[in-house]
Image 1: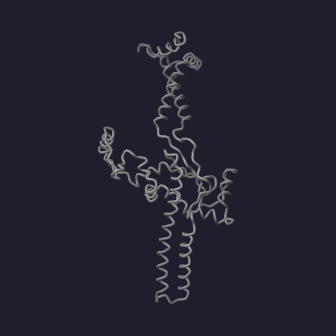
Image 2: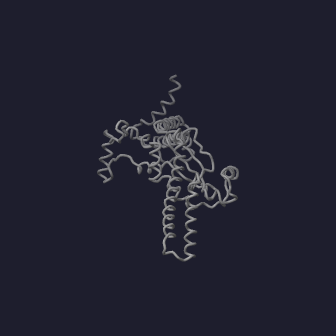
Image 3: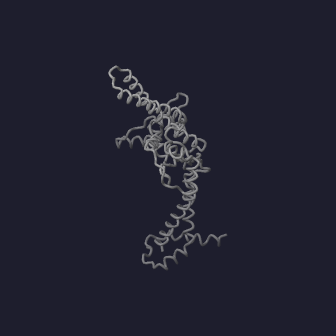
Length: 318
């Protein structure tokens, strides 16, 4: 046993030389690789330490699961060939990698912005109580109110905020959730123009799928309600105008009647469309395991950094 550990102990001793023993700085390339080859045990030790630290980081980091789905404009999906069906678009993406040609509805951009807006955040919090899940220690279930955190770390943070003239702690609200969604909701355009992949991450695997579905639904509902309110306001105005004795011209009355029909069509469309602005063109997929932290990448990075650090120290002490 002693004979087995003797070479490893000898490797450790090189780091405890007297400070007067300075390492060389004139290595040739061959000497460099030769030195590292002789000290391979040191590199293994540092690589192992790097792996252990990376593993420790992964264990203390809250894992995140993801849910994703492809969405497209309802208009874009219903104007061509009574349109291209959702399954057809999904098939194009999977089989051919995408093709240009579908024109995105400009309203889809507003829809994407709504996904992380204050309006959607308020509805999501009302349905899922997401802030309570994210900050359980700050929520008092008995009183139904948020309680101010305490402790040394919190007090230090508050002191730093005060020194930097930053806003102190305040109870979480819709703006807090909007900031969270901004970091955990991502949209990327696919190779098919106007088709986006929406991805949501959350620590709760059972929640992340319904959360994504809720975001898509609420953004649709908000735009539907906004259009309905505008159409009803315009309809009321046009009816009053047509009833007014001041409108006597036949052409003017026909124009107003046509505008009224347009507003009624908008209202009918808002009621009939389940997905008002955007709709999913594929099923929501949920990751089987955590997507963060990326364990394999962390372990490789830890081992690589350990080897690099070990090599630098070996060369400095040679």
